[in-house]
Image (cartoon, rainbow, N blue to C red; front, side, top):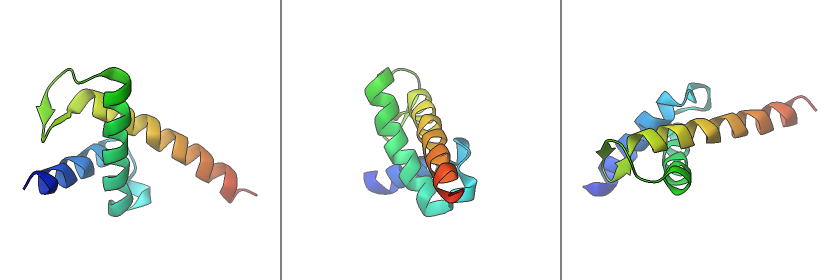
Length: 78
C-alpha cells in the first residue's frame, strides 16, 4: 500500500512541478526522483505525505524538471 501512495504522491508532485508536457509516467518518475533530490538537499521539513516531505519534494521536482527541460530543449534544437 505504501508503494501505491508513493506513486500517487509522485504523480502529484510531478504535476505540480509543471511537467505535464512529459506525460504521466514521466511525471511520476520526475516526482519520485525530485522528491529524493529535494529531501536530500533540503531535508525533511514541512508537511509529509506517504513518507515524503512535500515542500522539499516539490522544490526538488521543479529543479529536476527545469534541468531536464533545458537538456531536452538543447538536444532537440540540434
